Length: 151
Image (cartoon, rainbow, N blue to C red; front, side):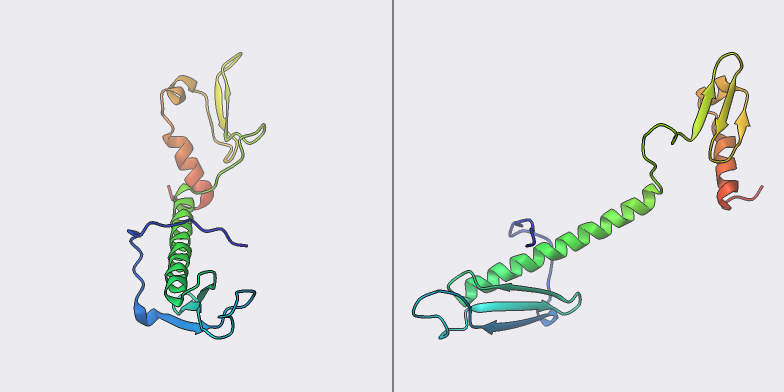
């Protein structure tokens, strides 16, 4: 079973007619006197992506074609959204779990002052400057550790 969103008619997905391979065939299952006499079931293959959708729930071929096209558009929208999610994940970078032991810096205020980056080992004793936002040396140390920075 696959669950897809029901899209409005004003969805901005354009499908070229030459990208579609539409075939009609006889529906299966109980249906009365017209079963095995009319080709009302529709199968659509989207050539660029290889997505195959089919519909045989409606009584007419035209209605089945419209339903199958809606299903195809929903799948294409889902693929497009997943590609965007992948791009967003690439921009965000690595995400660590928020739990004990996964912090990237340790702050010691008493009896001495020290900020230590647990990823790179860089330490800074001027904790008030770090708390005021002076994180440049921590960023440089991280970039050096990743090999993205030469200094």
